[in-house]
Length: 473
Ligand code: NHF
Image 1: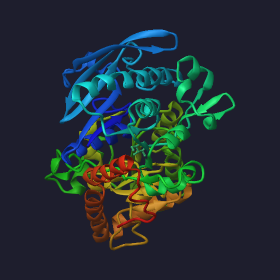
Image 2: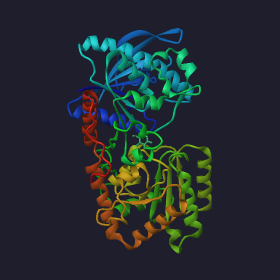
Image 3: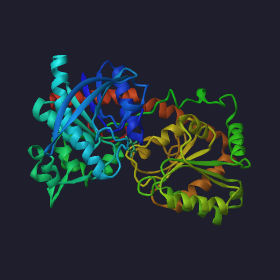
Image 4: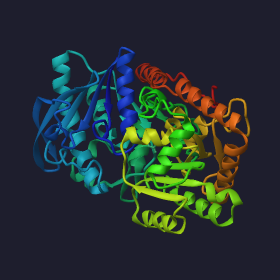
């Protein structure tokens, strides 16, 4: 099938997990023999990357509001996936999202440019794309036009509900009156995600637990066409064989890494991700560390905590405060060390803490499991779907699940985890092995792409093959 994947993020651009997901979906669809075409704003990529070697493939003008904008489309190829980068001064802005104003402007231009380019594509190829696949809400108006003018069905994947609302007046001024629906107008605002849920043929999200968590608030309204497809993990990259220190034992790796960070050896708890209180819950981890270090057992002096990421300034300050208070135990690395170095951290840490308040899917717990770091994660979204709690199933267990927004429970799990490292070494080794097997067999991108291929088929033939309400493993 020929599938247009709309996304605002795709490698070489990465803001968050959406980029990895959209990129991997495309690459895996190619492996299954499909032809994905990525449609995205250029975000300036064609101006400063030689990696993709983009070539100009089409030029036209689009009307947004009362003005006309000359617009170009550049074609590129990355790992056999064809990419079409839409370009004009608005679509070339380097800031992928920015504030809503910037996002909306990009969306307006993208939504007008996509149907214009489809005309060219269809007449060149003498066929229409079979289906559109919108990754998050930014491509919804474009897909609505494709459906309106070219009868192209679409699948809409929610990677994270954002509740974006655009003023109806602005949408009218910019020339979108013809596709607005009165049922999604609330006061003077237009609800884009419900619009997408209504217009698409198939609606999905990235885990069963997230589907259930958001059922009442959102998905229930679209019962009958709402389902889920798990993301996958790139096991070829998150591979212990590829470590710089692959020959060393795990204990030696930990010792080295801790010493590089100015620490003595000890059980290591690692956090990696955005420092954002809304979703990632890193503030709860900070409180849990404080709890462990101020109230915990005599073993607490041995514990090491490394927090890697950047984001909210006040969280960075709180981390620095902890570092000052517990210089032998806590280290904050503010920034991004790159995937290769992060891999070394996963492969050295005993535990990876994922304290998210919500997590539609979440890649960190899978990356950690691939490298033998035991996840201590909250029982939400994709973390709940991918981690098997060792206390409920010691034989198959891969990690520990704790309730979200609960620093005390997290602190208890950390103390428990530290005890395991000292007293249950064989079990800990087994749980590490379980994690790698579980992550790399159940959560492959090939499996995800095969499920998407089925959804595309369903969207074309107007049926739905699966809505599964329990974990199939
Ligand atoms: O993994 C890709 C990512 C998810 O949980 C993540 C999120 C955004 O919040 O599907 O999208």
